[in-house]
Amino acid sequence: MDRIKILVVDDESRMRKLVRDFLEREGFWVLEAGDGLEAMDLFYQDKEIALMILDVMMPKMDGWQVCREVRQTSGIPIIMLTARSEERDELQGFELGVDEYISKPFSPKILVARVTAILRRSHALDAGQTVDAGGISIDKAAHQVKIDGKEIELSYKEFELLSYFIENQGIALSREKILNNVWNYDYFGDARTIDTHVKKLRSKLGEKGNYIRTIWGMGYKFEVE
Image 1 (spheres, one colour):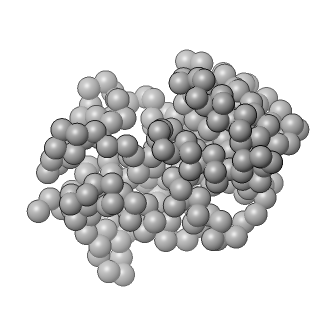
Image 2: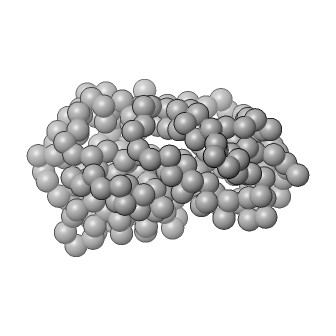
């Protein structure tokens, strides 16, 4: 594995060290930040950061604010850590563009497995692999989406979701099937996670968002008009 950079943001030094030790054992290059402001300084300084592990409750600038600011310029994967497990917190995270959501306490091995799965899907794609549908062009190697030739910015999960829809054109997809294939692990959250992502994806696709059709009581189907 190439030395992929991961930014770990948490105000607890013991937590950062725990996560860092497990990630470095797998060959990752780990950067650390103790608060949101330090995290943003590192993020702007280093364009090679491939993934961010972000705690919610931090001084100076919390995880929500960091996520919101990162998403203004970047679609890198974000894994959010929180001590709270209330559903509304999780839905807020997905609204802001969080890709994975892990509640403390958690198994470091599970965290590393999720990091590895995300990076495998985002970095190990065949060069030149492109998919086109109804004016939407997806370049998987470059992790780039264009609408009628104009590039749009999607978060990692939005990119994965759109790719899955396009690769399954005309097929009715249940929310459970989408969760299993796009999130790629046993997800124990509410299926409204899908609805949240679809809503944001439709908005970013503009009029082509109509290609994603709701199948009431089941899920969605991508169909070019």
